[in-house]
Length: 77
Length: 222
Image 1 (cartoon, rainbow over the protein chains, first blue to last red):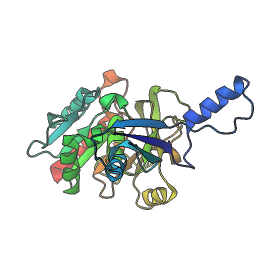
Image 2: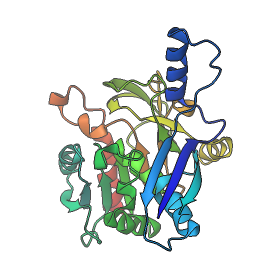
Image 3: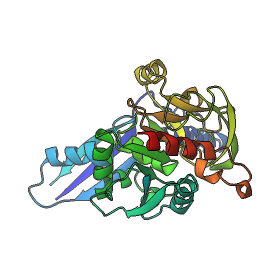
Image 4: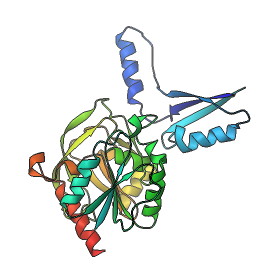
């Protein structure tokens, strides 16, 4: 089984990389991009029977720094 | 006095830190990240700069979970002294031994130069050889030194006089120009600038030497 973890900076935390991408898109002529936030997608290959609670614990302890990042767990069969 | 300097895969300032401690009169042991205990009789642990685990995931995040860091966290709980420099500061923040986080520099550039710092407090075993308000010159070399902390955390740091150093000319976007912070018991210091790179005349400056000398004095007296 698999799980997909998406880690993003929390709202309100300045994302300098996202700002740089936004400005690059603007200078390339892509008008109307009013915000860019950059994050990470982490794909986990898991033993059958791994629970969402266990993946959440992985996020809390390592995959995200919850001081500045939020995360979302999607369990795939 | 005995110091232990940690070595992670990717540490590259460990030998400089060893020399910093040695120059102030410490016996120094180096400790591998897979070790689960610190040597007996250690007075201070140094967490050096570098790129532990290639900065994968987040700077310091994987090193923070290494076996030796559990021993260091216990050592700190029991009142041990810890100095984290650059990547070492990032590791201490990731273990939550120090508050806040170090994010990508605001201008997204790696910054490597000698930087003027202001000593924000002389009330710590690390900074007692400086005067509060004194300006010193210490090298910085980092891509992720942009210190961020929430409003409540900043109020606490200020209220408890736990900001050790600030930048005179903020190079990385750090909140409140913060370059180094102390733990609540003042025995753990994390800082992005490299005092161990300014301890001998050949380094181009010696403003880091009083930090190591102050530690030696404090730990002899202890």
